[in-house]
Image 1 (cartoon, rainbow, N blue to C red):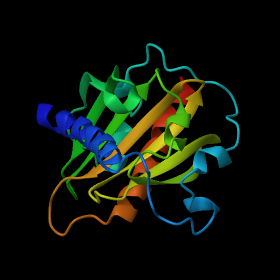
Image 2: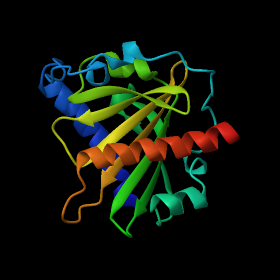
Image 3: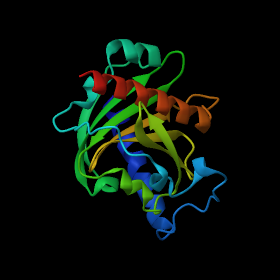
Image 4: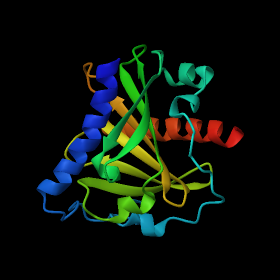
Length: 198
């Protein structure tokens, strides 16, 4: 399971590297609607209240029952590592795999060094779509160079966010990226349910 956690962090680094490779020009996907704008963060509503993440264990945010419903049947793996995307600060991460009925991995990171405005910078190789998770502003981050994962970012407090990544486990046929994004939103909703019930 240690390799799974590393894989999730490696993907975050890969997105940042891809962004740097294009010289910070950002995605060239033309906006087709208000839901597909590269500057979608600017369109987000205010959060209903602040929910601070300081001292919260990311592995405590998906209950055993929630994990079972989501098909995440492996033991949660807790880790912490610096993430370039979040100013190189160490970010606590919980990685949970699933093998039946499909192979997937969910990663829940609690970022206390950077706010959701990080995703309005335009230097990520991804399409950014506005969303709402339990009333809290969020964005769906759809990588344009990688199709095996999707990320949902939830704005919970000033300078803090929840980063939920949902990743294909590598079986054939691959899970479509659109489905991975939907699953990431479902996981993010479950995480927020637990966080708000604390």
